[in-house]
Image 1 (cartoon, rainbow, N blue to C red):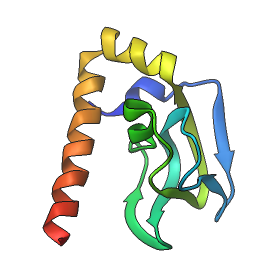
Image 2: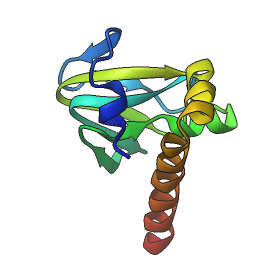
Image 3: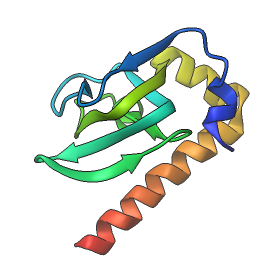
Length: 118
């Protein structure tokens, strides 16, 4: 499943300029984002830990555990994103099980790469 297919025609998008922060570490998280165009760098302690391109997701951890952001996300070039609120996330999980599996796979992949670095 590619989230880009679910959100390709999303009318309400957020646009960021190069270097603009989508969210910062420690902030409350009220949405996750699907990258529609461009790229987003995820930083922790000023270091890029993930580069996310079109179809990728960022900010999902804050929705799942309802905790402050664990990293900062910054636009790499011009970026267009679809926001997924807590309510919409719940609806998508119920109505599109493939979306829920995709989010879980992203989380597992990121966890696996993190533990390999330790």
